[in-house]
Length: 178
Image (cartoon, one colour):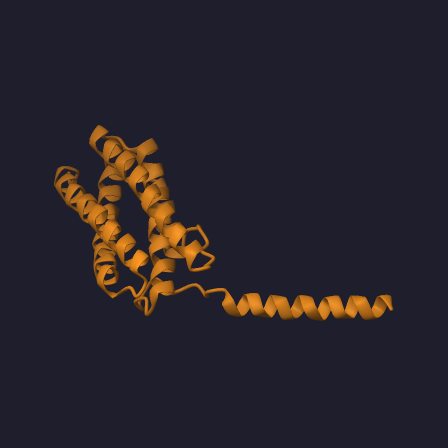
């Protein structure tokens, strides 16, 4: 009888694990292909926001220039808000999203973390410009293409903040290029 219960529990456990695995989104390759649906977009957007928060946190502690530190502080707070909003959307869609850095972002984080002074400021601002240009393109598309109305609004809100950050970073980029 105990063997039967154990076997039954094992089978039920395996079935549940397979069901959860089938519902669990696979990591979307961030380099290359664009998101094809709301869930893929949300996974990508959360990954972008997580990276922005982590990079901004590093910069607000390590920046040489007060201007860069101030921008990093603003980005840190605003990207936390955007990330939290997107995580709420993920929860509504019953989508589990991991908050770690992808390998390419982790490599860039490690590279920046080794820099100091003006070199750090210059490279961080360059990273912000590049990341926000890519995010702006993505948010622009999904602010009109998302099928979920709440997600469409979240993308539009993120687009407005992203474009503001991009504009500020481009201005600062000209001043950190020595």
